[in-house]
Image 1: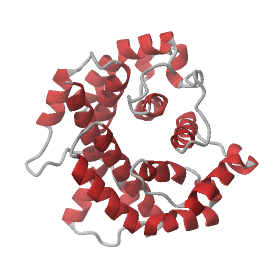
Image 2 (image 1 turned 60 degrees about the horizontal axis):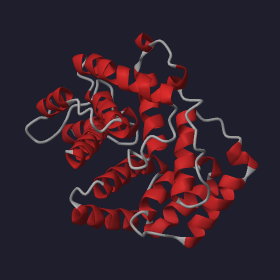
Image 3 (image 1 turned 120 degrees about the horizontal axis):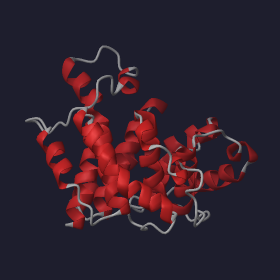
Image 4 (image 1 turned 30 degrees about the vertical axis):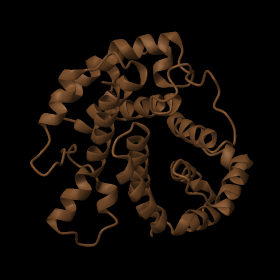
Length: 265
């Protein structure tokens, strides 16, 4: 398995981990995770990747998701523990949401705990002008919320009062903007944010739009240009493969959003 394949595999494993934790098709989730664990040779692929490239410590998130299903590798876990403690990994320059990803993974693995108030370096902490929202900012804040709340499973204790008030006011407005653009990728992630911070605020009209965008074969279309990183690893993919890779991520996040909503109804 190539390094390039680990990112989409990680997204898929995360999706099934979310499905499973929210009670959606648990048996199928467990069967898929078993196959995915086989695909990384019981963690040896991740071990070799981290041994060769310690800067790819973000792979600890993928291992943490596997471990939720009881898939463990002692050597890999010892290496992750060691790398997280090194000055090299501590000094890696990541966007803040990626740092939260690592903190979330370390907490899931029992290595250390995430700070109780960890949102002070998030974009939304100072309640900035909401009209400067962009695709990049949207992805950053959605991931901030996912990791701070453990995808809604740990509640909102790690958010300041101002952050929660700001997000609850402006997420519906941003949903309207991205739904008008038919950007179902960001719509799906913002719907997940809404579930993480306020399960009473269902945003039903946006779920209806998301479901309405689904095509006859179940695909939910991605924004133009999506999937380029996946396509770059393919040699002459046919049109069906291109269609799959171009819409892969949106289908996953839409599935997670719908699974989280169904669990809260």
